[in-house]
Image 1 (spheres, one colour):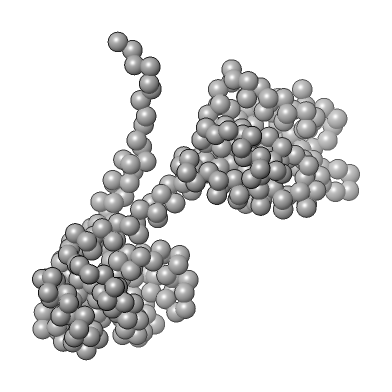
Image 2: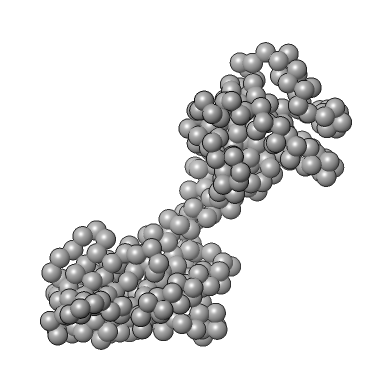
Length: 318
């Protein structure tokens, strides 16, 4: 019996699983437990008594937790610099947010490479004091602690990071797919091509360049006698999360507005989710045409033919 509902591919969740395995080995309780095996526990207790308030330690003890489960101390971070990631995740800071604040950037190699520079080592005591002060606020405000709760708090920080990085990968893939599609459409006019650009000669004898760009994602420019003319600003939003589509449309609108000020006159926004285009026109009035990437990849679809005809008309090719 044929099921009328197609199977959905949970590739995002599968990718999360394998990435989470790596993160757990480096930044979760197993890594902390392993580091403790190589340290004199008396030294750990001594540092905890110096850096952490007795009130906070007593509260953790009431839940059968030792202080290092929440509070970073120099001996632990020296033993395993990766553990800085353990405490950062527990505090709920993204890497970008944490390492761009004040002097914390010098400690980034600890979490990313497991190494500690001379400057970072000299400032390690101050780093621990700062993080402990922040963590004591957490201990004061939260009424219950356990190892599962600690892991859940860390996972809450990791989740958005994973999704954000995957959305970036989806965006890069979507942009590459669009670029390859354009390359196929203009193949009979190509004079030169690189991984980042295509140069064609249109039917009027003018040179047109299609290129990856930072803002917009793809730009199409016509070379005139004494200047260049921006033809098309193309924003490709490859994220698969429908709930975040409005943020992505807002980003596309800002990019198109900048392109308009530079003289572009056609603005395309390509999405990787199914959405009502009319509803999006209020959020990106600059967009001339919305397209769905999956439909563009289907060369029998009306959307593909509209995209192809619009590109051909603007670039001056048949």
